[in-house]
Length: 294
Image 1 (cartoon, rainbow, N blue to C red):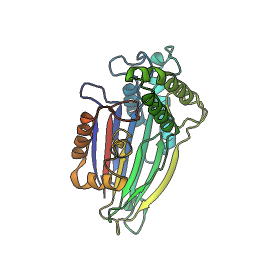
Image 2 (cartoon, rainbow, N blue to C red):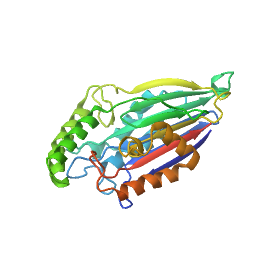
Image 3 (cartoon, rainbow, N blue to C red):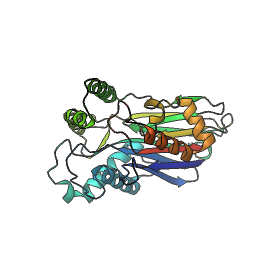
Image 4 (cartoon, rainbow, N blue to C red):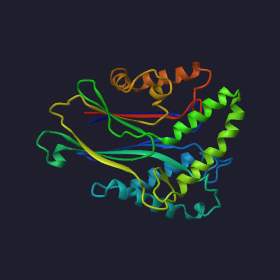
């Protein structure tokens, strides 16, 4: 397996709130994780005034996870243990009075790959275990160039926000006025996410078990010697769902044939040439992609 990764901030002078983590436990077991820290909807940062709270959260969680992750510990248990470690290490900081809408959250997609020598599969295959919270994307590009969405998920909030933005544009509201109307909606949503008894995103203080999407699949390398797994944050996926420059299959084939830097450059060039980014809250976003080749 070969892994290629790329992550860029929304603008060169902005902190990147995305993160990629790759952990090779041994020659047969690989963990690849992508994080998308949700931009703050607070007027200030409470946990790290330099990095910003979203970037602090994903970086500190990744560090804590590396202390507890192990081949015999499930992804779900590892997430819970990492949060326990993180809260213990930063107990003094986390006692600060932070409004519920200001606690940082993040999307996370984690793939664990075990090859045949570790699983005992006779077909030379790879077992893939998926753990996902939030709206990162995960695709398989097979040897025939066909794509499969391995973790279909529609964030219902995105549709609500797009409808609201489109209506405000029709009403003639400028960007500043649109943001003023959106902010209460975004804060209410953040409170709901941080206080849910079944959180569907990664958060610091879950009030119950995470409602993660967990599933497994097998990739047979006898028939898929050029198969690729591609993980990406929604900032990179704008090439499809916001800008319509590709469909899913076309984007994956372009990643495989042109390389990730070329696609990232195309994304940023398109954004630089646009007057606004359509019905999205931010004109540009952090963008992250990881491609695992077999």
